[in-house]
Image 1 (cartoon, one colour):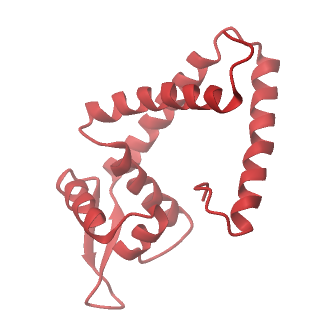
Image 2 (image 1 turned 30 degrees about the vertical axis):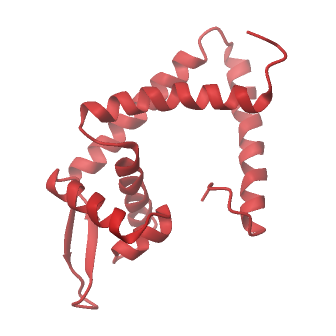
Image 3 (image 1 turned 90 degrees about the horizontal axis):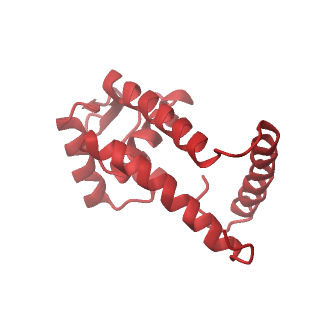
Amino acid sequence: MDGNMPVGLRFSLLHRSFKKKMDEMLAEKELTGVQFGVMGALMRMERCGKEEISQRDLEEATRLAHPTMTEILKRLEKKEFLRAEQSGRDRRCKCIHATEKAYLLRDEVAEVENETFSWLCRGLSPEQIEALLSATDVMLQNAREDCKKGRDCGCD
């Protein structure tokens, strides 16, 4: 590999390789990355204890427009990855919940992520992998600090 390759290009190539593997896995399930991202946001909110999650909550979390989210939620409900039911607090709103099928898919995706990471790290020693993870932890923290300063960096 070219030692003079720009850092941004390095990250971009790694991202594309990782994303390709994830997209292939999701395509087998007839899902898109955006649909899975919506499910991920929903499951994170549930894990944090948010009791009633609305479409608006998901739109804000994913930065998707209302019409786009409406279609995504319809498709995910049809595929039984989520269910929508009337809110106990506001009868005009629907609460959205991830189904067991969504949580099982999340576990499958985690396995593919781990396999892809191992595949990309082949040839690296355990110490090099640990150093890589430590370095990226610091980089992610730096990115989060930028977000806290009001910069929209997409790392929420």
